[in-house]
Length: 442
Image (cartoon, rainbow, N blue to C red):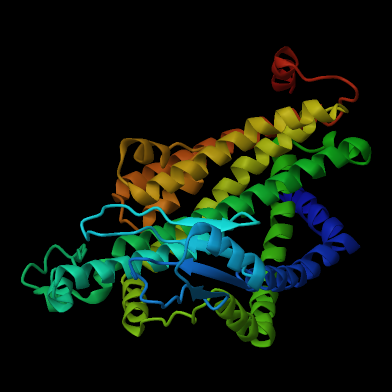
């Protein structure tokens, strides 16, 4: 264990002391803030293109009122198509919207026609279509003489209050609580967020391990260490050292990123939100306090101790598992860049598959595919966290734990054998026969 600590310390401090580490670690939150500002600015420009259109509405469905957006103004005229075109060209209208004659409220579809020198963009198409759909519904209600309040009373809000408290069978609807109706969505959100965090952390740190090994194939200093250290200790020390670098970066980002995020919101957020709302012709949506209270109540009902412990365990297990595989690949790689990219797909594909299965797990956490994938070591670090908020059977969680530990230890041993021999191979491709020879090396 002393050798493992020495190797881990060397890996950690050799990277932390590099200027690149400080540049990436401190620069990433700043880039994140700038990225947020640029994205917010881009979206604030959406829908700011002003258009003035001419509308022909012979059935008077719109009742000479057009409020599809603040960037759209309209004038109503009645005339033939040639007359509308003449008015457009003479008075500088951007387009002509022709509403067909509608005689019966039983019509099932209406085809609007838009004439312009330029094609209709997506924002205008959606704004005009949705606005006309609402006005058409009002026109039909008026023509049919239907009481709008009576029509609204036909709509019924249906909620499913989900609870895992089987003992409390005498609870009525009021005591179940508003938050329980959003339980599946909150659980799915928790699982997906945890899975994505593990995915990014494992993938980034794993590729860091692979780059580190590839660098060491050029740096001959490690050849001295290889002659005196067991493969398992060598790989374990490297994993601990590089993993500690990743944890250090994450802790720094957890401090700086929220600070920069709230600073950007305080300086730019309100003004950009107002610009975006004005551009889209609407106001910022109001957040229902009862919904927030329901989400908070639902979040408080989860076993966060189990979720937190499981998150740490699956992150550590997934990191050691995939980082070992990335390290073995780094030792196998040669000078051919195309071949190196092909080899990296061997490890990348299982991670991507795990993400897709995790998305399925959020929708159907107890399906056969999800249950078995959550216990399969290559998928479990990402899939099982997606199921944790849905209260899977504890035996499945324990089996997933045990299989992940056993498989990770095997992969670390396997990667250490490959690393010890492969790090000394220069200019020689590693095929299957060569790998078998490496594994037999004592």
